[in-house]
Amino acid sequence: MQVGTPAADVGFEELYRAQWHSLVRVAMFLVDDVESAKDCVQDAFLGLYRRPLRDPDAQLAYLHRSVVNAARSMLRRRGTVRRHLRGAQAHDVEAADHPVIVGAEHAALMQALGQLPQRQREVLILRYWLGLPEAQIAAALGIRPGTVKSAASRALAALETRLGGLR
Amino acid sequence: MTGKLDLDTRLVAALTDTARRNLSDGAPPPPFRRPAVSSKPAGRIRSWAVPVLAAAVVVALTVGALVLTRSAQHSSRPSPANRPTAFVTLRATGQLSAAEMNTARQIISARAGVLGASHADVRIVGTEEITASLPGVAPADVGDLGAPDALRIRPLVINSTVPAATPSGNSAGPRRVVDQWKSLGFPPPKDAAAYDALSPAQQSAVRAVLNRWDCGNAPLDLPGTPIVTCDMPHTAKFLLGAAIVASSQHPTATAVDQSGIGGVGWGVVLTMAPAEQRQWTSYTAQHNEVLHPTDTANVVAVTVDSDVIQASTLQSTITGPTEIVTGLSQRDATRLAGFLLNGILPVRFNVVSISSR
Image (cartoon, rainbow over the protein chains, first blue to last red):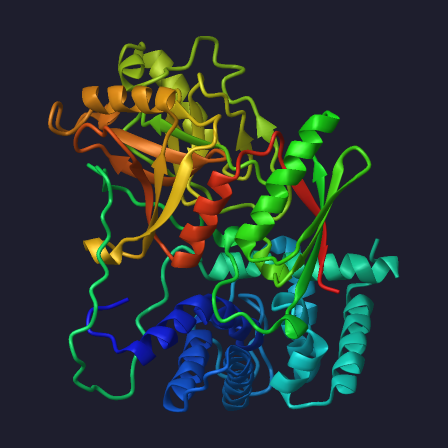
């Protein structure tokens, strides 16, 4: 806590410090670029700062939604094709400045994840990285819970197909 | 069904590993950039009275990713109906008696509380597995729940660190334990003075072990024997001497906000058991910058499960609690202190599966 911070800001600072890492990682998996991910998160918090919410549930839901939306806009600006590994084929798209580094062991899975349709990828990240229940994923993405469920199963099936031969 | 479960686990592992590689959890987030500047009234300054720190000044700070895998849920928790629940299965890496398994179960239950789980259900299954259901904890925050978390303080033997080679990528799997001195042919130096007393050929042999060491392996970590080890992000290697302090009892560990006393981020302060405190005080009384400036023996490294979390230079005698690490986020400091407080697991438990619902 800094000197001279008004009481209302203290709660915001706590939320910011508590959630920053988690949200940057979510954004990172969606935009594939660490610096862009940080920008997405900064934007999300800025929105919350301008329109504060009191309820912790509402705050988190807002942040998740904002980060997902910011990531989507960023990808739209950057083009629809995303790079996952260094040295991948450059398409007619502006490359990420600080591409996410992926270990060799997980490269195939992360690449397959990156090739999924946007919504399926978002569902998997929110479910397996944040561990959100269906209702919260639905709220964050602006879709019905039923759609979350079907997107998740299609996504997993697609991953299995791409990776093939799972033990 | 089995195939899908494997994919769940692999997905979480891949996400965790990727996150770790790209965003260290060690540093606090950058200051939030507000849209407008407004004048604020003078607020409370939080003061922190820390008993006798006489603390070390940080040198060669390699805190990095200590607690990448050890972060905890924090405030602003969603209501119970909407919280995630992590399901974790842990398997012991050695044979344990029923009593030891019971101890392990208690420690893991306590750790579940540190992670923020409410009403965690932690059970022994068979003779070597423990399952934990952790309401309120996301799979990504479980981290290295089964790590022993053994804390040691060792002196530096050679006053330089060696850069580590690019990691091989096996950061998610269990690490191979290696007896580093098996082929040395003479007792390895327990401290800087012992190293200086070696012949040039012997010193060369010791340096060879240091240079060859792969951070992806784990050293056979015995308190009375020196070890070659690395910092958490595997960027630097150290040759460390026999342990000055090897915590076998539960120390009292407290997370401390440094900003009130002019520091950065949060730290962890350790209060040792009397016997260990005596050894520590004795060492610091004989090796510090006031007595022998720039002596290699003044540099000590704090290790948790063999990984260096901080290297510091002793400035003066430390007669009481010691700040063992600084520059962490509140979440990480709280988690580390909480885990240290609750005891050391008798063996490492590997996470064999982790999922959420």
